[in-house]
Length: 93
Image (cartoon, rainbow, N blue to C red):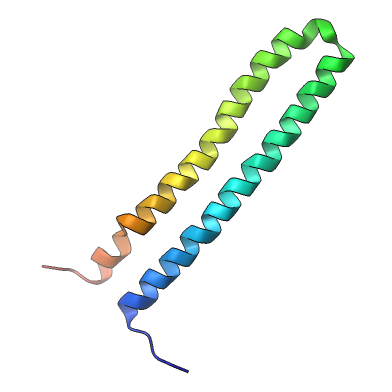
């Protein structure tokens, strides 16, 4: 095999970790949002008089679920562009 420098290895692992985190961070909220919409629509068809309350609750729940994906994106961007591991293991000064 071949040897990698430790800086290259840390960068490679960081990029792979960010990629996996973005994949899981996008798929998981999408699945849960779909299930939430399914249950809300099911409840609206069973009890049309409760549709207004369910709609408001659904919008709040969707916003909270989507914020999870945004937090994952934020962490991945920090790992990719402001990598704290490189400064910790390889001080520049």
